[in-house]
Length: 137
Ligand SMILES: [Zn+2]
Ligand SMILES: [Zn+2]
Image (cartoon, rainbow, N blue to C red; front, side, top):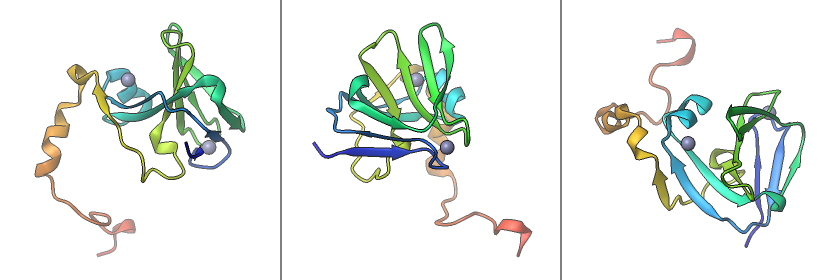
């Protein structure tokens, strides 16, 4: 197992773990949508005691026994922890320093999946921004 490393947007919080990875999944639940302001989120599950953190992490209890950690400086979401899986922490895969090897093996709570995701294939695609920043033409 290679060392996994990650960080928040501003870099004030970092994490690392030698694993083992206990799950790789994409969660479509409405709470994850609201917590991340995104239509879904991807997680890497790890044993809680196998993860080393640096920097301050704040958490929000989104439902009883469920804690969602974030960087107080930049607001990046870092993890999901629940009393339902007490030995495990689910770290947001988008915080990985290198996401190239990340492969989710499951999608969960599809019953709450954002319906507009079905429209994405029909939307125009652009390698860069759709419109130039600053209103330039
Ligand atoms: Zn940060
Ligand atoms: Zn979720």
